Length: 95
Ligand SMILES: [Zn+2]
Image (cartoon, rainbow, N blue to C red; front, side):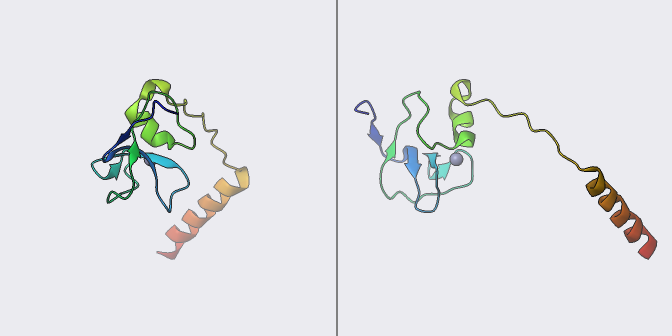
């Protein structure tokens, strides 16, 4: 990992309370979920996926090498949608 360059306040960084590393720029993670006030140094991106990196940050930084989003199969169980329908019916009936 000798080609990693430590930079000031821009780059990949682990926070105490975040299990993944995020890419920080001007104090904020690219995914917009985290803020840092500059303890420790960030590691500049080298164009390769990092271990435990935040996928949202990666997508904003270099979309070309970001993992493709998995297709989410919407799971709605028949009884669940019926429950919702019944709740709506009850709500309407109560008015
Ligand atoms: Zn992130």
